[in-house]
Image 1 (cartoon, rainbow, N blue to C red):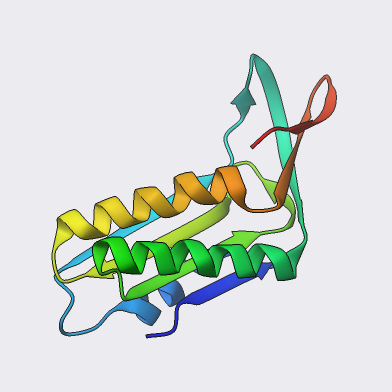
Image 2: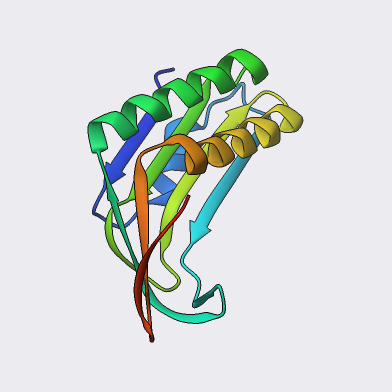
Length: 137
């Protein structure tokens, strides 16, 4: 299955991503949903803003998913990341991995989010009550 990869300014749809990877041969589905919280580094957060180089971000996410496919057999993967303003409680990223067994789904999902956060050109700005600042990934 070709991975589903979305870099979008629209709210993320967990159910659609889950439906995209579900299949009869799947025994384990892991969903990671990164949600905007109301605090960070001792500051009260109002909202986050995400920016990216979308074409490069999508290309790098595809590479990460391919690595997960090779290492854990993660053939069914969906990754979606928001851009623009994301409010407290809204999802900024959702990763869904479906594999025949749960252990591989957990490992692949964790690898995808951890690698995405450190290598993909998506930048986060925290807007707090005290001002705003771009945050290292």
